[in-house]
Length: 131
Image 1: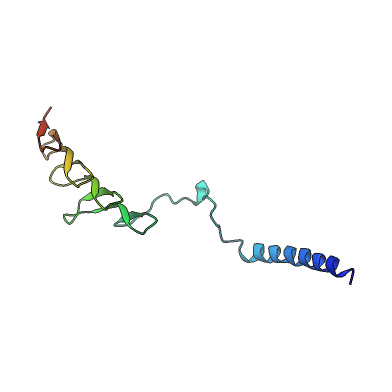
Image 2: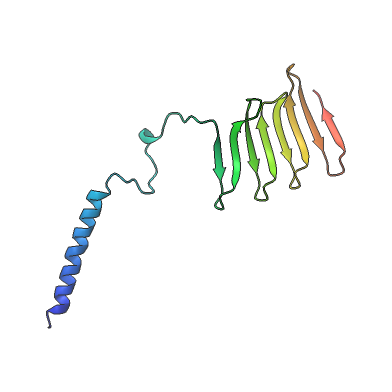
């Protein structure tokens, strides 16, 4: 019986090594959580929409197409308020909203190529700048 603890330790070590070897052979093609090498990174990805989702499964950013077929990028805060929009529409530009979803800033370029900046404060006073 005095050899029983040594025998248990010997078997444990032997089966541990065997288990490690079997796992290495069986799962050698599974990359785990390692970062891909430069050669493994695709040169291009194609899709009609990309979504960035948070830990609760909510869409927080979207790169997609509008109903008119124009590309846009939209960022949504944790309260699901659409805060930043960048895209092409009748006027191409950037829209920034506050936490209540009210538009506060619009930077755009119209179809004639004329830029404008619209700034709106909380009292709804609006300043439009045309250079």
